[in-house]
Image (cartoon, rainbow, N blue to C red; front, side, top):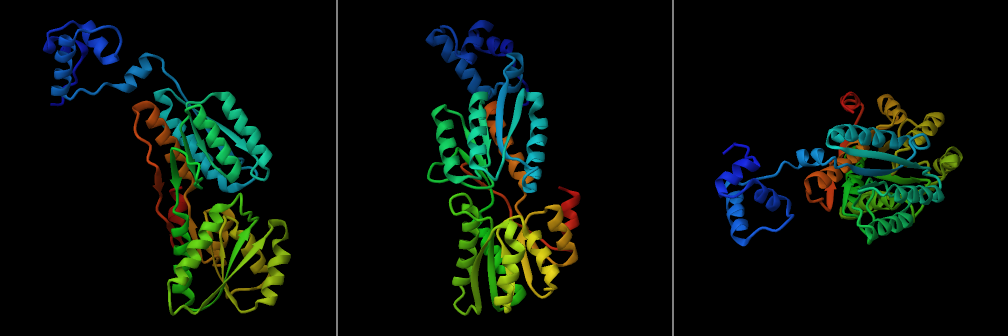
Length: 348
């Protein structure tokens, strides 16, 4: 049952020539109906599976994947995504898969559009896309679809114009998890959701987290929590948050919907606000620093490394093996505190 059959073996079993078997396997040239049936019957009997990797290497077949990624030098969150892409690229290098990373400035839609055009000029076989700018990402996915280029998005879904697949977190559920953390820690009180650099058209993922957060508390009929929302520009965070807390001194919890919890933690430290529960996202170095010190209470790990790695893996396996791309792949929601953070840092 474990025998690896060669074309010669199949030809002997079917009673035909090796050339006939080759033509059937590779669907080229003419084969009589009788010979076709003989070969097909043998292939079904032995459950023959062609070695696609060997064929690709023999034919010198090369696959090109482009990853359109926000520049990690501008936003440190994407540093781990880039590491995940590079690691996946190494995993599939032996299979003639080439991965090109094209970075755009996450602060400017023009940069995304410009670098999307660069991707099109590369004529890739597949694209991994971080759809930071929602409308522009919809247009990009439409362009790829017109060229029959499969696309997987990660970190954020794009609807109604959807890619072949998405890898990331269930953002609404993520918001509900954050709400549960506050409920078990505070029991009651005033909580503020903070969106940093929030823009409705470009940061749908933050809105979905808020939706999940509010849904959780709305489902509790005896809830004694009051939920508010605050929109802050990063360069004005210190003054805006200070003023807000002065006018809302009864605030007991802050839920930060981005990876920039450390900015809020810095301000709380300056204000000597030690009694506010702070929940945010991601294992950025500065976030980990404040998590260890206790200034940040919990971080929800979105695992950008694994998201990007899995996205490249799915595209590579689609190209090499013709594996079907799952429409949605949700990753687990990891809750990190000061006691378990080092396990994640060591294994990142």
